[in-house]
Amino acid sequence: MRRHRIAAIPADGIGKEVIPAGLEVLRALAERDGGFALDVEDFPWGSDYYRATGRMMPEDGLETLKGFDAIFFGAVGDKDLPDDITLWGLRLKICQGFDQYANIRPTRVLPGLTSPLRAVNPGDIDWVIVRENSEGEYAGHGGRAHRGHPEEIATETAIFTRVGVTRIMRTAFRIAASRPRKLLTVVTKSNAQRHGMVFWDEIAAEVARDFPDVTWDKELVDAMAARMVRKPGSIDTVVATNLHADILSDLAGAVAGSLGVAPTANLDPERRHPSMFEPIHGSAFDIAGKGIANPVATFWTAAMMLEHLGEAPAARRLMTAVEQVCADGVLTADVGGKAMTAEVTAAVVAAIKGAN
Ligand code: ATP
Ligand code: MG
Image (cartoon, rainbow, N blue to C red; front, side, top):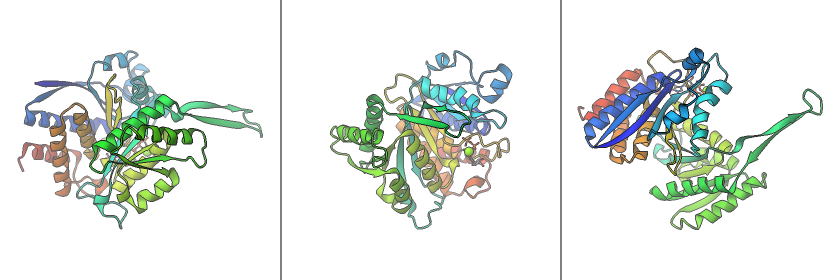
């Protein structure tokens, strides 16, 4: 029996609703498969933990997580606490502490959902966005001078390292090579940002030599935004910087129908540390506690986690069940249905068990 150790961190808001739903579905899959077991440990970290202890997670939190095979994360954010405390105190601490440098964001229009792009064939949207997750524009380098004076200036310097750009590029080429179309678009802004972005283009060309079966092209980020809307079928795998991919993946999520269905993985592809799997959406306080959060993003996230753990057949079974349930119209309000979180979860569990 293969055993996988999972650290579950529901954290805040609807994270506390979708992670238990995800665990229920994972348990059903393990039972059905019979070949693997999940040892799940729950960690009550997050904003309530902060209110009780003054920290988002214990001081030795990373030490505790180190021994796990994967982290299954909900959402972080609180209406009374700043992001500096919540986001930086938990999610980013884990991402940075474990050098999860590759943020992977698949986008598809699931059956039963509609894209706001009316002219588009839903089958045309099947993308994976690979976001550099450790440096670039979000490296935090910069400063302020002459505060409050008319000549005040602020700088925000993007940092691109040969190691950082090469490893994300290799990850993106590897993902592109593993997909049927073997197509990669490298996004930069090298016409206007003539140092870091030209560096990206150069490294892309270097890495491409090791992946002769991948067809790749370059696109400027502004043109890419337009292409995602106008020619979605021309896109498969995309790699971009921290900032560019942040923006493009929100666009991708919107084009696919709802934030409530968008999953992501924060990977350490070298597997030196546990990787972290989470729905893209935040804690969504407007709907928290009502039992109406869409659990599909979390189910898809769970499928990515299973894939990472080497349980590809279970991952496929989960996605087939999710697609069947969506196609049957068992949908939450954010995607035009009336179902509660628990009803969608029960339907997916039933589909996994083959009971309907
Ligand atoms: P963040 O601070 O990360 O932006 P947030 O709490 O603002 O987080 P978002 O992820 O930005 O939440 O989501 C915006 C809105 O989309 C939410 O307020 C909610 O109404 C809706 N939404 C997000 N995720 C879901 C979901 N899983 N199910 C249903 N509605 C959702
Ligand atoms: Mg928001």
